[in-house]
Length: 386
Image (tube, rainbow, N blue to C red; front, side):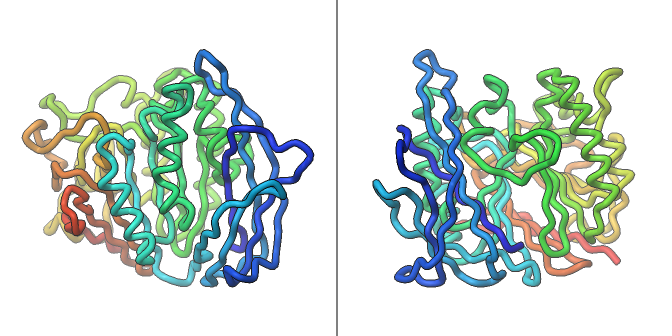
């Protein structure tokens, strides 16, 4: 982990100048620079406004060191921000959530900001449905959201994957506003993976299935087969947007066809559940439903229960966590759903999930209640294996 990419957007072009990042180990000594590449792209609104995304890669970074940086050009430079280069030899601490907007999401944004500046996170991962929607109001909604999250996203890696609200115009906004790891198949941000310490993270695009993108769904499946086959990390954590298992208004739980398609597949697009199970994936997180629920280990509709739902050892299948309650236009709680037999805990508060990886044999999660001003911790859970 010796690189860091910084991405920023301008409303107008930068003619006759070169955008760049200036960085260093002191805010008063930004000794190094890296040139940026620029992508111009049209918003899908009726006016077709053009925005300009700049991306610069800082290299030869030392894990654990704190770096200061600013971005811009000879015309103008930003304020100075800072980040700590991820250190995979330390415990991994992540915030993971889906379904966050400025509307009803400000308490979560504020608590993520406070926790970031208190040094609690190594990475923040947003598992789809961003800003509601990035393209609304000629893209102004996306600009407002990006400005709102800058107080944490400028200081810790902010990773995203697509939900149904990003699929508009062939995923135009999420492709052009963010920079994720390359998958070697498509030059976009729609599925990716990376290693961090003991963990292999995988982000998948469930919208390929819901939107009937057959070619892309098959390409992603083939990539996933290869990615899992070469994975040597002790823990494997997979994330996508649409839920496979959860409690809903219906007595049968999650059963929307567009959600189940990525799990079961059809004659033209292979389902993902068996592949993930066969490669011993440990945990799967998703959003889409605007609530929080943790499930027992599940495979093919069967929950594998043991003595303590809060501490599971040597799980026979992936543990599932629905974490879609970060804050948006609608919200659900336990009183709105019928609990499924595989449900371990359901919560009705707004909030997000914290993940901690201690070592090769223990990880933990808990829910942070952002409707509480001090961020009450709930549903502490430990997953252990030999």
